[in-house]
Image 1 (tube, rainbow, N blue to C red):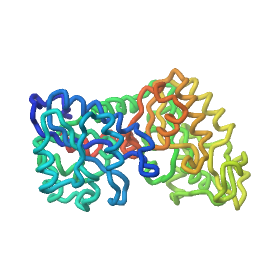
Image 2 (image 1 turned 90 degrees about the horizontal axis):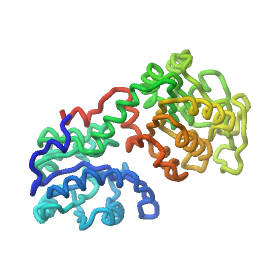
Image 3 (image 1 turned 45 degrees about the horizontal axis):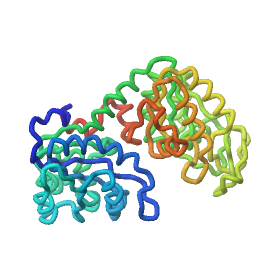
Amino acid sequence: MRTVRGIKRLEGLPVLVRAALNVPIVDGKVSGSFRLRRALPTIEYLRERHAKVILLGHIGDRGTESLQPVYETMKTMVPGLKFCPVTTGPVARAAVRALAPGEVLMLENVRRDVGEKKNTKAFAAALADLADVFVQDSFDVCHRPHASVVGVPEFLPSYAGLLVEEEVRELKKALKPKNPSLAVIGGAKFATKQPVLKKLLAVYERVYVGGALANDFAVAEGLPVGKSLVGGASKAEIRVLLGNRRLSLPLDYVVAPHGGKREQGRVATVRDVKDSEAILDNGPKTIAMLAERVEKAKTIVWNGPLGNYENGFTTATEDLARLIANSRAHSIVGGGDTVAAIEKVGVSGKFSFISTGGGAMLDFLSKGTLPGIEALR
């Protein structure tokens, strides 16, 4: 994989950088700048070598959102940062031409054009028309077959940015853990987690499944889940994983009436979930079990919350963040809510590596590569 370090001459060169700009926005303002901070090393590397830096990124999924709030935050990090209200065409080309060496321009949300997700040749070519070189530094979208990920490299010499280079290096370490080893996979969507669970069960001594993901396993075991979120996985698929002795599941839950608040929660055993209740977090016995395993582990990989994090059921996730942060293990973590919990409890500096990818991290762990990485080869 070629990296940005291999570009021999950058002075005055227009460089299109796919950056990780998709950050949470609350009331029109950036509420978490983790990904933006991680984008800075590549931007600074190019600025210091007097390249003309053109930032390309997305925000949200609807294709209607604007990167303007991201620009407002990032201009405090990147001196003289400019913003272009479109992504391609004459206005964008003029904005690029106006850049002096070492200056940085952010283009509008790339997903505003339907050609991005459809990966149309026309849109990829229009993006490529803005620069002489492409740098992929948005690991979080490298699993997406989109125009700004796999389309542009067909038209321009393409390289990995410093962030993507680091992500690949660190996640490869996660695939060769030192034992005792522990993998924790939470969140929801069994269909997207099944491949990584199979992979981790083959290389990790212990694999714990928490969050809503564990509800599918409870259903397959004939345990009550009430009105909990269930992914609808086939029992046959689940039972294949249940037969693996390395797999472990919650010992207890925090449950509440469906749609209930955190203060309505109660601790329940795995057999004591009422029909009117939903499983919303992992319980204290489960955290105690994980604490023992974290303390012994030499390698830990973690992706996904243990509870309904967005609705306030954050206790188990935050407890696990503290446990891993204070362990002696080599720790590799990722996922939006996971990173939010780590930052909330103020322990981000105690992890060996925090990935900017959620789904991309899981796909890389299961496959060892991603479409966006292959496009650079």
